[in-house]
Image 1 (tube, rainbow, N blue to C red):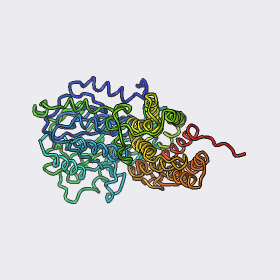
Image 2: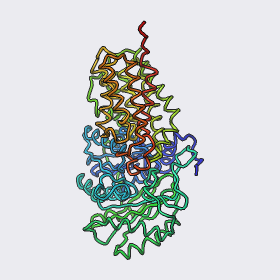
Image 3: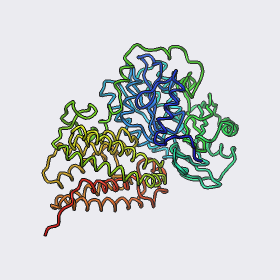
Image 4: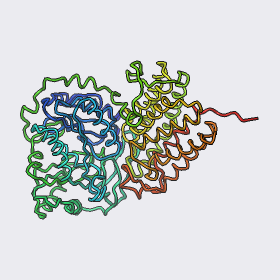
Amino acid sequence: MVSPLADDPARFVDDALDGFVDLYADQVRRVPGGVVRAVPAPASQVAVVVGGGSGHYPAFCGLVGPGYAHGAVVGNVFTSPSTADAVSVGAAAAGDAGVLLLTGNYAGDVMNFTLARDELRARGIPAEFLVVTDDVASAPADESHRRRGIAGDHVVFKVAGAAAAEGLSFDDVVAAARHANDRTRTLGVAFDGCTLPGADAPLFTVPEGTVGLGVGIHGEPGIGEVPACTASELALILVDRLLTERPADAGPRVGVVLNGLGRTKHEELFVLWRAVRPLLDAAGLQAVQPDVGELVTSLDMSGCSLTLVWLDDDLERWWCAPAHTPAYRRGQVGGVADAPRSDDAGTRAESSTPGSAGSAASGAASGAASSDASAPGGAARVVDATDASEASGVVAALGAVRTVLTDLETELGRLDAVAGDGDHGRGMLRGAGAAADAASAAADAGHGAVASLREAGRAWADRAGGTSGVLWGAGIGAVAHALAARPVANPSTRTAAAVRAGVAAVVALGGAQPGDKTMVDAAEPFAAALEQAAAAGEPLGAAWDAALEAARTAAQETAALRPRLGRARPLAERSVGTPDPGAVSFAAIVAAVRSTVVPEEKETP
């Protein structure tokens, strides 16, 4: 099913956010990267900031309000927000008591929000970051730290917001959120796939006559199929599976969320609840204020999920506490939670502009560099021994990268959709486009190649978001830093050292190793081959060609691998036979760079 309600798919999230903020201007206001409460909470209250990719409404922006979240960071569809966005919203929402960042457990969110936490701390704002891990289908119980966050997000976010509204200390709010996550379990199913804005086909399909079991909220196919069934039969599957993970010390009272994923509507959920409730009763469980409706969706996916949170006295109080947001209401919120604060909230928000934390990703692995205030965008400028003519090569290279990724966008999305969420092509193109524009602006301002690269890395991380965005931002930033710090005369040796620094930054930030089925599987052979050829005295063109061949071969060989990291990991078997999109895009990018900045060597007579 293809939705016609998009003017420009590339602007879908911005357009949707514009409409949302206009509708609920009395409750939320827009800041760079997302939204915060229109009327701030008291400065003494811990701020709870939630976030993730778009496509899940009312998560995340629809859950901002008294008794719930103080702000929401809004990424592109099914893509983590950038570090800069998370810092911006976190700083805008924070009072004097600090900020707790909460997301689902996805690689891009973990990287970007961890960096955002560190940047907020560097600014003097107490900050912590936790992930929700409620999806029982995505990892076994003894590896619960690897589980995804799905509709259990609603439970953990709600508890944290209620604990903050009570006036608990920073440490106690963090502990409340962690406790809620430890007691929350979810299982989801899909009847049919979802469609990305502008796409002409669903991200995935469920075989006719079956139900996809273990569905994620980013369009990930289920980990298996069961025959199509009645509501009563489905209720039995969901309840039985969740009861196997009942905590050993759990009491009889549970909070319940029966969640529609976008196309399964309220009447259908009511029928399913009619079947779920007796099964909970028969298990000796008492459902406390169950939520039935759409809380964490997946665009237009047909499907649903069941969440149980085993309550104790504290969790029950927070679960039942009042909340008032654009999309979620419970009880009557008193005036205290709505009271304005007399602090510098406006100043905080204004100081958190897009790109203000863009250096976090690239700086995470490359370290500090000498700077001056004349850098593009007002950012610190790397000491740059290169001149403007070399900067034109950077601009040309990134222009070529944008062109090749434009051509590959659909194919990369297809590869990613086999076991992921299908957004790799769109995210890479978004990042490359932003990087090309940033480098061009820097070069036009008279800056050299190193400064242009540094700005490109920041822009890639800020605009693309997601896992690939933060990794490419870090890698490009590290390359720039290496080029500035190691002015080796020999082009092959200098380039090999810079590429090695970039790959090392990606490995350090993302944690992937060769064999994990990621971009590292192509990047590591590329860097190693380039180093080997440079050490043998090969000119840069020949060295690059040898390295490019190694990267292309390695990228194709990832088809035989099973992913060990990222969203594709729970669907490892589906991925076998398909090369990793990150490795394929890496090989395509270094091929594009070869055509623009690596000189052609003249043949010796």
